Amino acid sequence: MKAILCDAPFALSVIERARPQPGPGEVLLKIARVGLCGTDYHIYSGTQPYLSYPRVMGHEISGTVAATGEDSAFGIGQLVTVNPYLACGECRACRRGKPNCCSNISVLGVHQDGAMSEYVLVPERALIDATGLSPDHAAMVEFLAIGAHAVSRAAVRRDDRVLVVGAGPIGVAAALFAKLDGADVTLIDTRQARLDHAREKIGIAHTILVSDQLKADLAAATDGEFFDCVFDATGNIQAMSAGLAYVAHGGTYVLVSVVKDDLIFPDPEFHKRETTLLSSRNATAGDFDRVIAAICSGKLPMRALHTHSVAMNDLPRDLPNLIDQADSVLKAIVVM
Image (cartoon, rainbow, N blue to C red):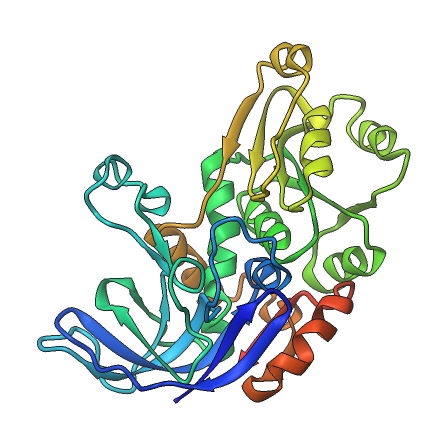
């Protein structure tokens, strides 16, 4: 079978490898689509903090069941997506119902080879039934679940003022689920094209372009009180450090981004707000279920979220172009 291997930063190649066969508790998937996300772009550019090379990328997965072990609950040809966060089930986080932050976690496409291949072998426990979705939509469940999980972590309430920093896929996902929870959502970014798309196609009514007067603009939009909840989805340490200033007194700051740098806040600013500081990592099965239900009920603008497609064999050539065209690329999907 063919696979796309990231040999080193900025080096992708199409390789041949043997097709695996499922053992007990495993399922072989024929991959239909793989979504590209910030993690994959960071792997390609050498800035992903949890990875060693070479690696087959791909954790936003859509595929059909090709073969199973004995007594599988899944049928041949069934469309599925995958929860790519493979938890140990035994550590303290897992025992407390938080497998998304398992201390021994192995993420497909990061800690172990992922789905950027014609077939991939996964534990059956990681499969999620995607019946009723299209292959494209099934490949978009994972990134939407990241946003849904962040909003759940923050316990966003109706009429909360919510600021999302970063209009990439994860930021837009967080904005959508905060909106579904009844919040008044503002989205900011450095790229006007991203904001225009979010406002005109995705339905995020309030957008502000980042500028030297950003804090004044945000103050003006909130009568000087700022936001009950701020989500950072930028992957930029300067933006993450600045975000505390946009949190209202008594508010919550949620860091969805992961960076290699140290994050430093001025303690007086942090304390005077009695800030609740949260990180949000990965997603849980419940988040996947919420996303699938929202897609099936027509609550998410799936057509507007999916902006680009690329054929598997063209990915080594086209991935740099997708990065260069980031202003117009929201969600790119690889057709396998």
